[in-house]
Structure formats: C-alpha cells, structure tokens
Image 1 (cartoon, rainbow, N blue to C red):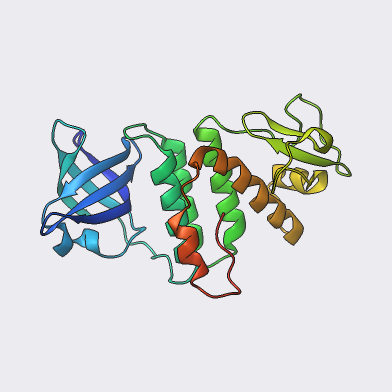
Image 2: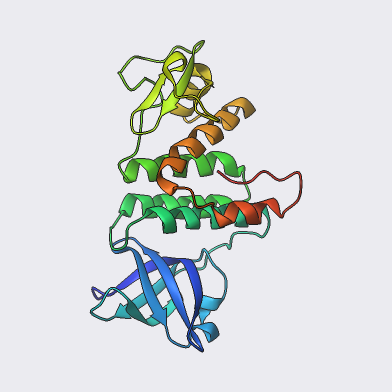
Length: 239
C-alpha cells in the first residue's frame, strides 16, 4: 500500500455540492480523516455502512480527495434495528471525540471487533460498554473500576460516585446530580472483571459510562439517541 492508501470504515457522510459527498473515515494508521468523494453519491460510499473499505486519497490540505474505495473483505453487514442504531451511536462518539489525523490503532481494532459482534446478533450491551471504556482510555480519560481515585480497593457492599477527571470516589463525597452517585461496588467490580451477565451490572455500566462520556461530549445532544428512541417506546437509547 502507498502512504495514502488504507483500510478504513465510513463514520459519516453528507452531500457536498451537486454530486459529491463529504466523508469522514476511520483508518488504522491515519485515525479520523475527512475526504471529498467526487461523484460519491453514485459510488459504493452511498451503500452499506460498517463495511471495511480499501480507500486511497490525495491532496495537501486537511481536506483530501478520495480517489478509490472498494470493499476490503466480504463482511457480514450490521443488521437493521437495534444493532444498527448502536453502530450509528458509536460512529457519532468517534466523530465527536476523536481529533482528526490522530491514529488510534488499538481503538480501530476494537471498533472492528464491535462491528463483528453486532453483526453476529449477540448481546450488544457488553460489546458496547467494552468499546466505550476503551474509547475513554485511548483518549486519556480512563479510570479504574476496582479502586477509588485515591487507590483504595472497592468494597462490594459499598456505594461509590464518579468524579469526572478523577474516577470513583466514596458515595458520601460524590458530586450531587443525576447519575453521579449510587454505583454499587459489586457492579463496578463485575465491570472490572468484564462480567456483564447481571442486568443490574449492565444498568450500572450504562449510567456510569454515560456520565463519564458526557463530560467530554458537551451539551449538544447525540442525534443517534434521538434516532434510537424512534424504534419504539420499549427501546432504550444507547449510552
């Protein structure tokens, strides 16, 4: 491969001028980058998302020109419904949080594992929580799940809060507010052990990671959460 050719995933695309697309890609070596796909509305980029593509681009500025895109492998597409909306949610996280041209090869591999898991139609929540934890760690915002910010091991019978920028703290010292207190030690320790079998652990993980991500996403709401709600009143939004 030349230095301007990689395997990448499409994170987002939108119309540009009359027939082109602005496309945000996530590549192993380049990280997140934006390209112009001239005439892209008639290309493969207008088709199925979440499929690895061999892409090549050229240009000297920040906005490159896509010169080639074709499927890298025969993959299993993410099925429509809940799994597809979760994929859109993850793509929006990457769009909002990843700086351009900042390589994260381990996160790229984790993203591929997540998509393969969603395509397999298994239980999606553990896959999603693992990726959210990896994303926070890759961006330098990770925190321990088995000890407090002061290094004290968690007690399974105690409750803990979360302090953005620090980590877990005893519940009595937690900042007041929705989602900022009341994380049980047993559920946090289960997360640390990558054990999401208990529904209460999954609920704890969702609240905790929503709180942790909100600090970096800012006040602008995630569009994918609104889209997810349209699945019906029984559906819970991702994250």
